[in-house]
Image (cartoon, rainbow, N blue to C red; front, top):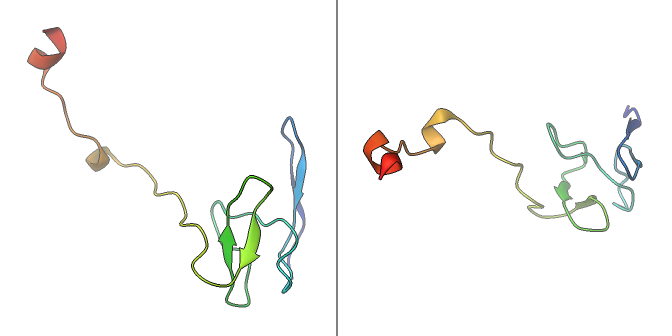
Length: 76
């Protein structure tokens, strides 16, 4: 059972569990709510559930993702 979620932003978009037809918006951040072997596809008109790989979830950033710049280079 999927529960509808409303995210209030300047353009309020209502996200709900995706249907097998893949026509309603789906919330992809944090978890894949598509089910039925479908994956989230992020696009400008809204997220949809599609067959195939969809759009990869954003990778969380860690300290290892950044290269340290020595102080000498910053001061020059």
